[in-house]
Length: 343
Image (cartoon, rainbow, N blue to C red; front, side):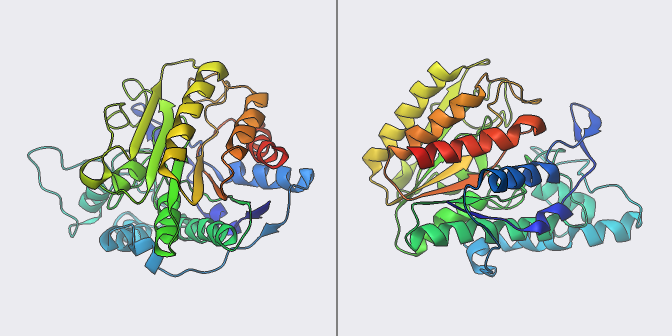
């Protein structure tokens, strides 16, 4: 299995995020991808390749041009406002009900209009990293479209919380959604399976009214977990997209037995959709010792996950999402990929 990777991700290295009412050390850090890459090389899983360049068109097929333009200039505008030694750009206010968005306003109002949380800071290298992550994901998709059984997009920052014109949840551009749209444009019928602990609200929103992409997410119930306002079981799609969206929210402390039942259900629904390819939003924050999550999957469960995905017999793009236990992340990520290969 070929892995695609860009060192540009290292430029996105926010030292802190604002969460739980206070500044805390960032958990979505460059070391995540670096450790996974080292493990892939150590296990000789396959070659690690640089991505190709796909330009802006695939991004703009999914994301609002205003959002993309804002992300490209946000750090420079922030520095002009607050100085070269300013901390990372984090919004301080949002246009809540009864207020007006100001996407052409000053940096504070634009930040609040384009984002939905305080945990997704913008630093000097953020946009270059997000832009490179898209190329990484599309390179993996192209490898699969050209005949590979599977490819791994070691894309960072992650993407599944970003929607058409909003970023948040550590995500700026939605890598998996951009891959899905690119495959549709190539005449391929894709399904997306999101196994991150947190619901892929951005991906759902992007395809909620469509019948050419099936989306399923297995995640912690948003009644207690981020993103809180989307990801409930009664969200099944609308219009042409009705019954093309499947959410499987699970309770706190879910272990493999219950998780595997949800996975089987998701894959059965995906089979009925009859896709040509599968995109896996591979979040690893379901691990029992993840610092910000509350599921109880163990190291060997990720081998089982990979083996089960093999049974779909579909060309598969694995796209790196969450997972924040630095000591275990590399092993459990590679376990999924090795389980898929051995299966």
